Picture 1 (cartoon, rainbow, N blue to C red):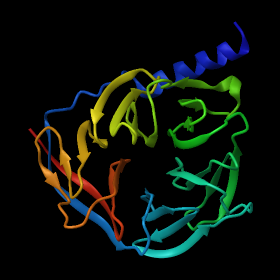
Picture 2 (picture 1 turned 60 degrees about the vertical axis):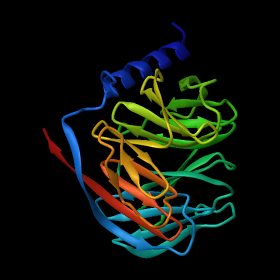
Picture 3 (picture 1 turned 135 degrees about the vertical axis):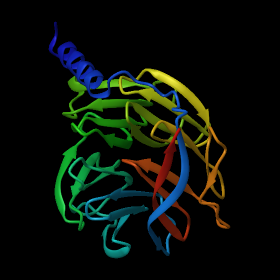
Picture 4 (picture 1 turned 135 degrees about the horizontal axis):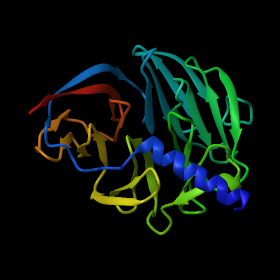
Length: 273
């Protein structure tokens, strides 16, 4: 067996063990009852994405080539700006939280993923030499990266960033992905061009396609509408607001809502039948 084949086989087996049997069937014994707001803060810019590191209550908010850092609801730092220094970006494309709680940021022009601590200090970086157009990414607890390459039009999984370690999926199924996140055993992609959410399992097998921007929490499906988000099974509406929500994300049990002047970081309470 060739080295490339052995590497791909090992990655597939690792992903299978990590994820177990994938299931996206909604549990009917969980009923959402209440939205708990952990943090709410005003901003004077239009956010593109926000991620939350729980232990230090730190929110990282992406705006153009800048990342604004809020700790316990108070802004403590801003990093980024155009340039080639460690803390600069040429085209900041996506951010996420590393397994250790620090920040990872993707510069699609430099083809690098940069790592910063919770205060915004540069730690290290990973070069994406064998990628052409990386634009979105996520990471698992065992540091397997899922990277959407806009040139390949597919999602690539890797731990080494070397092409002989690539395992890819999603080609011909994705048009213009706007977000990519992991939910238990699944990879959840929102396609802006189609206004649909496409769900794969961790091995890249297609699971389902859903209308609108969908996020999952405890196998419950939620759709973002203009002025609220809705639990699909019950029809319950949450975060009803007079202003429009731009985006939302559910990650590691935290729900993040973004508008053009406020960000909410929340959890959802459930009752079990």
